[in-house]
Length: 72
Image 1 (cartoon, one colour):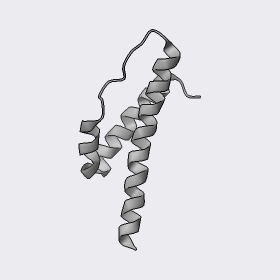
Image 2 (image 1 turned 180 degrees about the vertical axis):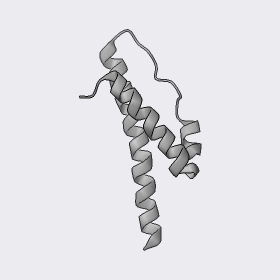
Image 3 (image 1 turned 180 degrees about the horizontal axis):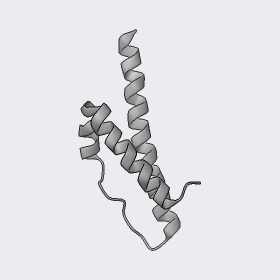
Image 4 (image 1 turned 60 degrees about the horizontal axis):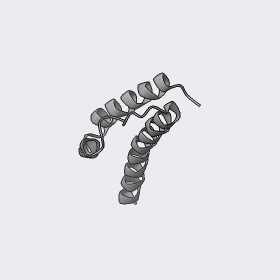
């Protein structure tokens, strides 16, 4: 399980990657919340951060799958 700082770094990296390598996906980033809601329970905050990162990964994954299907 990565630390909160590691997850934040990964979120920043994938966000930058989406903006540079997949500019057509940037519109989806605009529709996603830019901040993770904060609650007093750190486990809930960590879970929300992890879910946000997984959502970003899934956007890229689904985009790549769609591109491969178009090429066929």
